[in-house]
Image 1 (cartoon, rainbow, N blue to C red):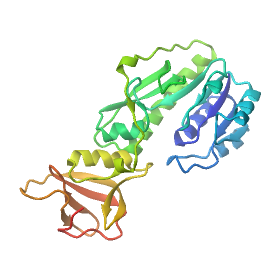
Image 2 (spheres, rainbow, N blue to C red):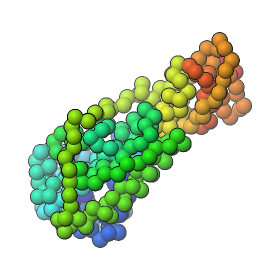
Image 3 (spheres, helix red, strand yellow):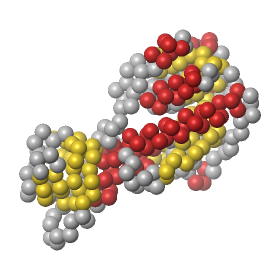
Image 4 (cartoon, helix red, strand yellow):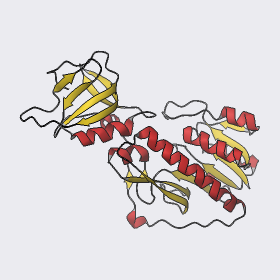
Length: 293
């Protein structure tokens, strides 16, 4: 089974590495040389060079040049793991076995953008790891493999990313031979259960201390590394915040956003219901006690 691989992020790198370890027949890789769009961008060049896999850098995977190159490799199937641009019909219809995509959620729920970020920001208790056959819709194709991934209170973007990745690599090891010998099974999604998450914007990462401490905690852990970070506004500038802790605070008549404590490294700020301790941050100078954020 000849595989053409498409990807450009950390998940892509680990998936490709797993496929190479499993002696999969990878006839080519389409990737990006650099990316200012993906905060978890990963260079696949070293893997391809070491395994002597033909590599092509592409900006537009649907261009005539890209499709002609893929056609020349005559893949039976395409794996598209970690690619932010839509795949159009001509490419979708090219391999006889189709294109297998990946989405870190429990499809049909939570289709769309930023599934790891939204799962944490919304305080979900579980997410998923789903491989599916791509269509010209959004994450709505037949499911090849799916596993649930539990989310703990202590999880953040990094730990959930790693948990989802570890689950996905085990799935690849399981379904690859079934694809190779044509013994795989897939099942259709129940579209009546589907929702789609939107693309996040800068305002989605702003900490507003009118929020509850729990909501702020979820926002910060959702956007921490390898992502862009949540932020507060201080002296007219955005300051990134990477880690916080919920703090009980029961004194009455204290306004939200007021700095309650400053130990020279961290600060505690009043929220709508309790308080939040800002532990890891990019403040050059910490706000003083009594200032407002």
